[in-house]
Image: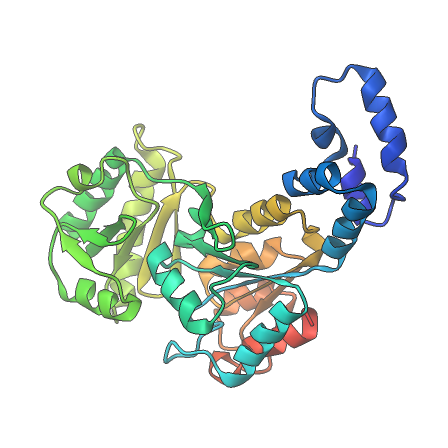
Length: 339
């Protein structure tokens, strides 16, 4: 049964019903709080208590109109030079001016996403950073992580040993650095692209005893080798009793194999963040181009794929852009579905 808030946001209940429900709750002896009974978020409860009924109604009505734009960075919001086009920049500025919300949704590390957000001028309240393909969600407004998951050390060891035996680069992440056990060209290329410091350590499990939000296998320019290693690693992840069910694998681009905690993906982040903020899922729009964007495109109310994106992702999208990421395709999505 839908709670009051869900029905009100869907236009299925009048605001005045909240008073009858409050009376019902007072007499019911229900162990849940009134906020839980009505389905309100914590910020809505704070406004109701500290201000007035009218203030709560105004906040709910504002959220009814607020949309949230989940967008991948590389290949979607950014062009191939890792820059934002002028039309896309103006569209993002207009999005904020009209009170909508932006969620930069990426496989990148938090520190890398922060740098991009600052460069785009969106490091501000109303912007969220979904990093490591959903393993961490950071609220710029409150300056804190609101969600975090990690892969355990014993699982890191399994993956690093498999990669070492195959002869391919694998890396993990601390809060500020990329860590690996073997220095290699791919590590340095990745560092240049992501603008992140790197560290070569003798034992990844000792360097990161608490685990890592994701691992990345990469062989830049050699997607066939990445695909071959995926075929080797996937059975080990699925079948090994000690690690069974701990991780999911997918590509963020042809030569990048992402390894993240099980059930962590961009699509799960769409549902989590909409619920956390209190915005109806029907007000969500997502944009992406690659395999790791597919869950997000399917989870959002409107899922858009770039016209130069993965054909398999295009097949599942609600909308395919006319313009690619080098010609402000993201701006096209914002104007069509947000503004």
